[in-house]
Length: 242
Image 1 (spheres, rainbow, N blue to C red):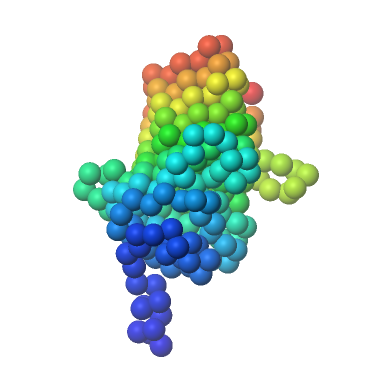
Image 2: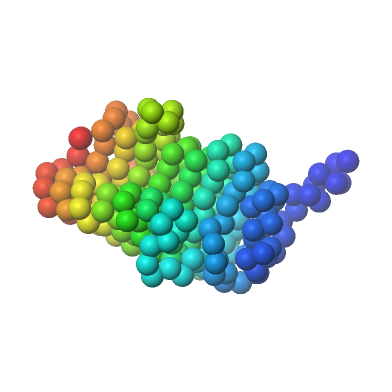
C-alpha cells in the first residue's frame, strides 16, 4: 500500500493539453516537458490536489481578446489545491496569455500556493489581470509581472458577503512588479479580504488613481518586505487605505 501511494503521487512529465487536463480532473504531481498552449481553461476540480512544476516552460492560453468568463489560464474550483513551482535553473517557467473578465492568469476559489515561476502577460476586463483570489492564496516565491486590468493588474483579493467568501492572501516572498491598473487604484494588489505581508517585494506597479503598490479596504498587517518605486496618479503611491 505504501508503494502504491508513493507511485500515485510520483511526479510525471507532461507535454500535452490532454495530459494536463487529466491531472486537473484527477489530481497528481506533474512537471512540464515542453510548452503547452491551452484551448480552454485548465480546471482544478473540487477535492483534487495538483502540483505543477513549470520546469522552465510556458503554459499559455494564447488569447489576444477576452474569452469572457472562460479566458483564465487556470481556474481552481472550491476545495481544490494547486501548488505552482519552477525547478528550472533559469526560472523561465511562465503562465501567460489569459484574457478573462476576472483573473486573466489564475482564478482561484480553492487553495493556491505560488512558490515559483512567473505569471505574466495576462489581462482581465474587470479585476485581477494576474490573479483574482476568492479563496486562499499563499505566495512564497515567483514573480507576478506585466499583467493588466481596469481594477488591479496584479492580485485582486476579493470579498463578497452575499456569496459568503473572503479572499485570504499571505505574501512572504516573491515579487509583484510592472502590473497596471488602467482605471482604478491598486496596480499591484487590491485587497478587500484578509491580507498579511511578511516578506517579498512590491514595486514598479502603476495605477490610474490611488495606491500604485497596494490599495486596501481592510486591515493590512505588514511586518516585512518592501514597497519601493511605485507610481500612482493620485494619492498613496506605495500604499493607499481605501
